[in-house]
Structure formats: C-alpha cells, structure tokens
Image (tube, rainbow, N blue to C red):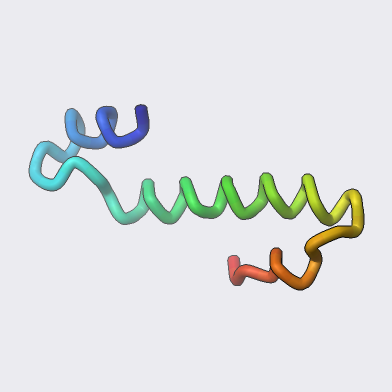
Length: 49
C-alpha cells in the first residue's frame, strides 16, 4: 500500500526514504505504546527515534 503510493509519486525507485523512516517510526511507536503499557519487553523496545 505504502510502496505503491510512493511509486506513483516518485516513479524511480518506488520507495522513498522519508516514507520509510515515517513507517518505521509509526511501527516503533505502536510497539512502544503496546508493550510499555504492559511493562513487558521494555529492554527490546529501546529503538532510537
């Protein structure tokens, strides 16, 4: 979904670095909210923002 949208916009490579960074940030934040709330896997979810 994200890649197709980017390939239409950026035609050349089909994946944009800024969108990739945003995508990873969203995933990181999702897991942070999910696991920090439960107090589990805190040591594994220490990715830099």
